[in-house]
Image 1 (cartoon, rainbow, N blue to C red):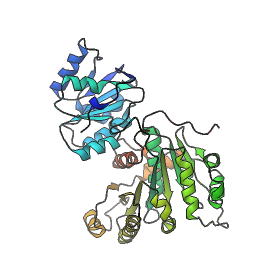
Image 2 (cartoon, rainbow, N blue to C red):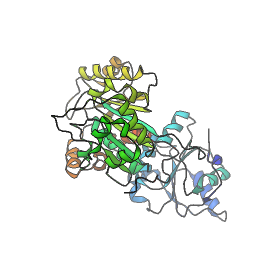
Image 3 (tube, rainbow, N blue to C red):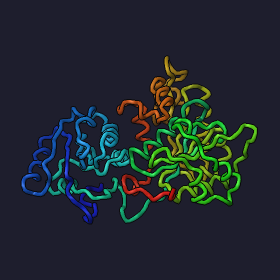
Image 4 (spheres, one colour):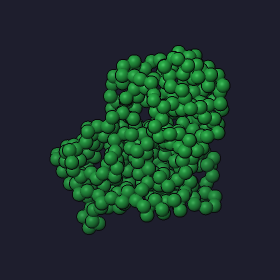
Length: 400
């Protein structure tokens, strides 16, 4: 398993401010020894009890956070929350030697995971930082290929577009990666509306004239939601429907990949049967459904269609819970019919959703950091990033 000792020694320095969250006296002693004449800054050591309020306990100037998850019930959620609560590089410590945990922590934004007990040499090595500290498992000598991520609802009204907006915003603002959000529902799409944006006028032109598609043409059709999040959407008149050709979709994706390391595409369910070539070039696909009999039927149909493609993406199944009362099918019944697991159950948050819609911001920005919806978005967004770009300098976009 990789450790901090594998990192490049070029352009490294000690952090100016270091915080450790741990209840382990041996780790505290090791940090204090390193600070005693061995070039390591004296750390602020906080108990694990501060994790729920970590953002209020850590100075914004903190460059490195050492997070001990040995006594934490849910290390993945704690790491995702720490990454979202701070701007610091997060290094995780624990005793669980599990490669699946190792990869999950990487997806959640951890820069490294070290097994305890750890000696002073490896501990000091973990504390070094660089101007472009790469995430776990990244190879700084290579630039990862851009990732194409699809979000689709098995049924209408289950919240797939809301989830797509939240995932794109999280990748851009929490994981620091330039992100393109594309809404392929040209008449009834809601991604631009959710972010209080007027969509550009070029998406229809691009899809009707694939030969004109290039990064410059597509860039002129995109709208800034934030400095890192760009939206491509439309509000076409109902009397002028358009039939989207498969080659137009792939040309559009190829053009966007030249600028964005992460693409999140909201695919309306009516377009799924004709989106085979788009699915073939996707890295991940998130299928959102509801715990009903019809939701089960359509989730199976969409998932099986994705699986049958020659280049099937990694599939996540997400289910929305009703606002009140029990769902028509409980989770065990649903998973038995699905013959597979539901990755995340998303609770409804009607009050926060109404406020977010009124403010024109993503739902996750109005939810507590430990809310189940936020945890799910952090996990799903972590799967959307190209690892060597995450938390590194952003690409130069169009000159305007």
